[in-house]
Image 1 (tube, rainbow, N blue to C red):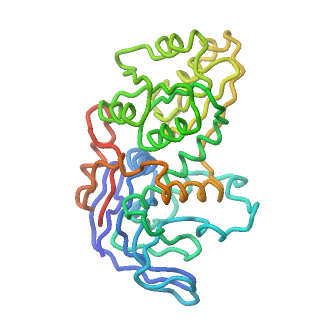
Image 2: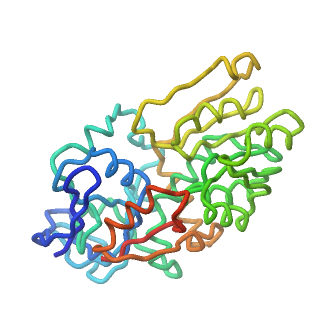
Length: 342
């Protein structure tokens, strides 16, 4: 089979490798689509994965072979990555990995991993769910980032008539904009340097979108909120200074939720915002719960969040190197969510 193999910092190469075989309790899945995740971009650009790794974890596909002992699946079933196996597969109250102290650098630099930027992937049958009738393969490949969006909205503890700001409008933020509007946000403001992302944010319901390279977003958004600042700020950019900017922007007693993945040390300047006496509630967004996956799968089935509108490009494996490089410069690229079709 063919796979996009991580070679070294900033380098992917399409190579032939043996097709995997499913072990007991596993499925062999022919990958239909795999979304390009921001985490993969960070790891690729910072040289974190072990050479020889195949990245990609936002995937869907078709069952090609059953391992011994697998029940409930058939060859030809459409499936999507779902670590809890779908509704009813996890006992109520079962803990997720939130209580484990995980080191992402150690995880990604461990012996070569085999992800879904490839023709085939093997996976435990307990970690996939069937794609519901009426849900397209493209939408199914968006389940994992939609889960991140759902979880982040819940972490922000949104209340009806809260004002919300987003720093960065990548695919997850674009899903979130739709959700917070549905949940009764009074206004949604966005800071984004990419014209394509800014336009899509406006299309999906943002009240105002600002370019932080041309405007002072703290001054602009605080002014629009009568000097108070937004009740919730979602930091989705991971750019230098954006977390500090979120703390300067948020209202007194407001909430800052950080979805961004920082690969380098950042600086905070508390004196710039501490003297305003903000009682900031700060959370980060990594873990998710079975309930988040349940709600996200339901949103796909009921189409309450339009994930396909964010998909702009479908590429082949041999286009990945150039696409990764382009995605690393959001100011100039016009892509939003990109799916790889092996």
